[in-house]
Length: 186
Image (cartoon, rainbow, N blue to C red; front, top):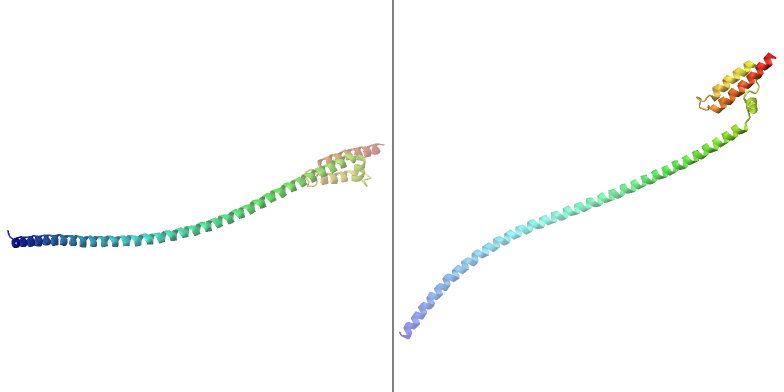
């Protein structure tokens, strides 16, 4: 073979190689084109998803802010109610303390009045009581009338009634009635 033939065969070989490379290159270009379209579609999908995610993120932030605002309002309302409850509780405690103090004062006053009453009852003698209650009675008829009046006044069913006073009036009446009976018999 000659050089010329060799050169031609080399040239044919190179041409076949070039055609083969061109086919491979065209296939590669076709694949790259398709891959580029696929990637652009994916990129578009990703952009849409990113937009949706951003909108959802903004909505979520708005919801969080609204919840925070409601929470602050609820906390403020709770604090106000708690303060109001504490004020009510203080008023009740003060009221109960005043009631207890008033009850103690009333108890002391009751004890003082009972002591005065017992002291008065202890010192008052029936003669003085008779003199005082039946002063001005000079007949048996007047004695009876005064006795009825005194019983009406001091009867225990009345508001100012006093059982001990009724007993003292009864004793004094019986004593004075006995004296009038003795005077009448004599």
